[in-house]
Amino acid sequence: MKLLVTGGLGFIGSAVVRHFACLPDTAVLNVDKCTYAGNPASVACIKDKNYQHLAADIANADTMAQAFTDFKPDAVLHLAAESHVDRSIDGPIDFMQTNLMGTFTLLEAARSYWEQLAGVKKDEFRFIHVSTDEVFGSLSETGAFTESTAYEPSSPYSASKAGSDHLARAWQHTYGLPVIVTNCSNNYGPYQFPEKLIPLITLKGLAGETLPVYGKGDNVRDWLYVDDHVSALECVLRKGTPGETYNIGGQCELSNLEVVKTICSLLDAHQPNKSHEELIKFVTDRPGHDYRYAMDITKINQELGWQPTETFNSGIEKTVEWYIKNPVWWQAILDGSYQLERLGTG
Image (cartoon, rainbow, N blue to C red):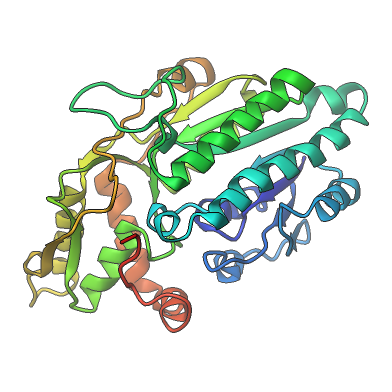
């Protein structure tokens, strides 16, 4: 299989690339323009001759058309996106350009390429559009998002992703392009850019700095270990039905404060002379902060046979241990583009 992955230097994308590039029957083209969150070090372990990186913007129509022509993919896993809610509050234009115009441009390049295929190649081509549970808005204390939940995005980020979801479905409905949409819950794991909650708290805790928690820390998320997400995407790629949507979640609902306290406990074991919970400080909440997300994964479980394998306790232990053991990876970030500062104040 020849797989075109967009955003393969990012957190989830690099996990996808590391997995598929090691499969004996798969060649991977990683299309990533190397934004602040795109890190070549995240795929430095890949030495396979069947892996290549194209430094390009998915919103560049000529370059995307040429990429399809030259590589001739059997499938696309589209993960390239601006993804941090806080950054979308401070500067939404990049989110509109990449998540909307970039997705549109990529869909058009894929359609033009697919329409020229014939026979089995055309029948088996797939375009997997990877999205988020944030497009659904916020839940109250009960219930969970299903594939039929109405969209109600509440941040510039989630609005841009909702728009890209609609584009992907429209290209399937209007042109017949074999698109599948996935919506995932909050990912965590190794190689995550430290602006996100879990690596941010981990690195600040290791440094003995204040651990900021938005509001009262009672916002709830469903936490999905990144390797579980990759296995779900592979399942969708190989067995999913074009035109369908699949929710992907970790079945691990926790409040932000519970997550932070769990990290503190793990850091206490690593630095036994400190009480990391004493570093917690509640700060002004994020503007428009959604209260709760939860995913119903019945469909992907029953139709495709997928379910997560990591509990939060096992996944977070692996994650914190990775950050402790890999300071070279994250210190290069802290020495350059990001120093764990607060974002998203508006």
